[in-house]
Length: 311
Image (tube, rainbow, N blue to C red; front, top):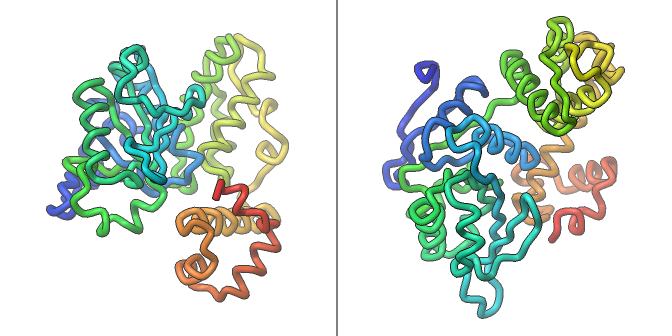
């Protein structure tokens, strides 16, 4: 399976050992094969947790905990990393390194760490040793600026022997849609206490025709809702899909226009996040004028973006 991967050595100074790209199922299976740390690349923020959960679910340690830590910059005289447990519950963790009971409950599973490069280098090392050596966790790193800032992160202890996991877009990857749809169905069966045995071929073909502007989160929610309304012991079929997906045709121009708008919105959203809502930098990165950027912000009703981004 792994021989279809594009594997290359990145900068030796960073000790980033390999870059994986290929089919989603192959990438996830490879990442689930061992506890080597990985970095998620080329994926919208809202999809990273779904990929990390899939890695955990397909691993040999799937019976252990999956959780998410979100890091943030230090403020004032704070002496410990700014870390929040954001899944499965929200909990501020100033005592992460001393709470023995909490650490024991997390031992041996998988952790998705959001934005750990915001921490000082010494505390990155401390966090890495705790997660990998003390807790024996599979560490999956998500950084919304990794692709842009990789060179400036040279020397970070988090990059030592790490693998970069380049997640493909669902568009034009029909095999990934088949894999993801069946995976999300298995998750939905657990959530809804059902035993739907699979998805009909005509339903899968329609799912593979649809361009999925919302990527994995949209596909996940579509399967989740379809499973909820479907009989518990029958294949999930076309009738369970939302009408805009069930009736979609590849020549649907109106839909394609909306898909383009959705892609543009997501690009602006992602870049504003990466620049901490700096309009000048955002316009430079997107190679448009600030006048055009402000026009699109007004068009997409993004005027209250600072609050939405938590800035």
